[in-house]
Structure formats: structure tokens, C-alpha cells
Image 1 (tube, rainbow, N blue to C red):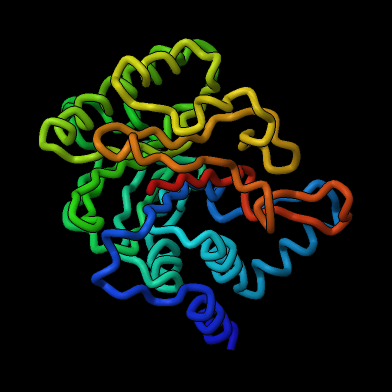
Image 2: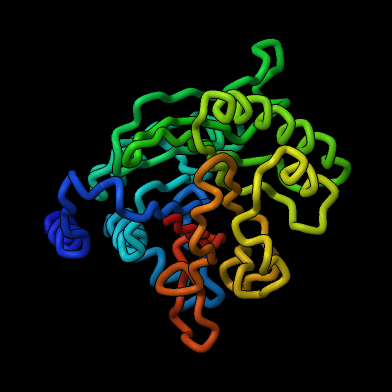
Length: 292
């Protein structure tokens, strides 16, 4: 019954567009670290509600409904533990998907700290850890995940990357810098082929960190760079966002068509401090970018 209701609700929320108009539709992309599908709360009442939702099998339908309210064409997920759950979410959203197992395995992460890209358009190419030297151990570079897909949107091909970089532990800046440089090698190949490039994910550094400058040096534009000190863009933690570590970067022809970018501080993405039983679907807040 719940699955039927969720599918009915999604159908109501997403009217079908005629195929001939696809090239004239905006492109809406979301990046979201889903915290291994673990909701969070600031109170016992909130945690109890979150446990009830999860135990009743309502979590994935709720995630799907919250995302669908923003009509995404592409969704990049980090910490999307289990391909089965990614496939189930993609089915609810009626999207194609590519799954990227993480490199580091341990402490309950038998599949790795996985990532995924979901797309309303058909995925025409997919690649795990693009341009990463096979001699480099998977737990050394992009130990979380790096994945690439190519989609056709209207009359153009767009390369989309999902990245989850090493957390900002002591003396790890050089690893994130190496990850950005490796990702740049891959994205430059797409740019040379005439594709637009969108890089999304949990980069685990803020805009004041030394590694942040490497994005601009690589020609990748932070879609929210004009507002990078605005609290409205903070993405973590969802109980009380204090930092911005989740980004949408863009390069190539599509960057001139950027319309807006913002963190989704709404719905079940954010814990409400004034509501005792409030919970959020993850410890991160998603970021939405829209291109004309």
C-alpha cells in the first residue's frame, strides 16, 4: 500500500513533458549525501519518529517524495550504502541509475562508502573511478567514491561526476588536492570532446580551505560562488548547518546557462529546532542547481 501511494504521489508531482520539448526544459541537478540512509534528530522524540519511519519501510519513499518536490533531472548521491537501495529509489523516481562502490571497506561498509547518479534521461556511458591510475589502491585515492556518467539532454551531451572526498582529518589536505587533480584529468577529456561537465558531491572542505582554489584553477565554477559566505548555503550538519562542504561545480558550454543554486533548507531535509519531534533524512542538506 505504501509503495502504491508513493508511486501515485510521484506521478501526480511529475507531469510528463512531451519529448519534443525536452531540449527546451531547464536542467535541474541535486547532490545529496544520504548518510547511509540514516535519518538524524536533535531530540529523543525526533529520533523515535525517525526509527519508526525506518522500521515501517517508509524511508526511501519519503526521500523520493522530498527530492521529487524539486523536480530533479539528475541526482548525485553519496554514502548511498547498498546498490539495492539505490535501485529501489531509482525505481520510485522512474530514473536510470549508475552505482559506484566505494574504495574503502570496513566498519560495516562491506560495499564501500558508495555513491550513485540517478538520471531522468538515459545514461549512455558510465565509469567508476575515471582517470584514476589502476596502480593506486582504492583506499588511497577516492576511498569514498568517484563516478562518471554521460547523459543526453536536449541536443547536447553532459558528463556528470559524483565525488565524495576524504574527510578533513588532520594533515589530509594533500589527499583531497590529489583527488581534485585526478578528477580534473577526467573532466578535461570531456571538455576536449565538447561536452559540458557537472561535478557534484561532498567535497569535505569549505571555501576557505587551500584545496578549494584548485577548482577554479581547473576551470570548474562553483555554482554558488557569489554566495559562499551566506548561511543559507550551509549544508552540514542538518541539525544546525554551520559549514558548506557540498558543491555543484560546472564547466563547458552549460556554465553560461546557470540560473540558480541553493541549499534545500526545507521539508524533511532540515531538523526544525522549534519542533520537538523533528528529524532530517540525513546529516547533510542537499544542494540544487538549475541551468537554463
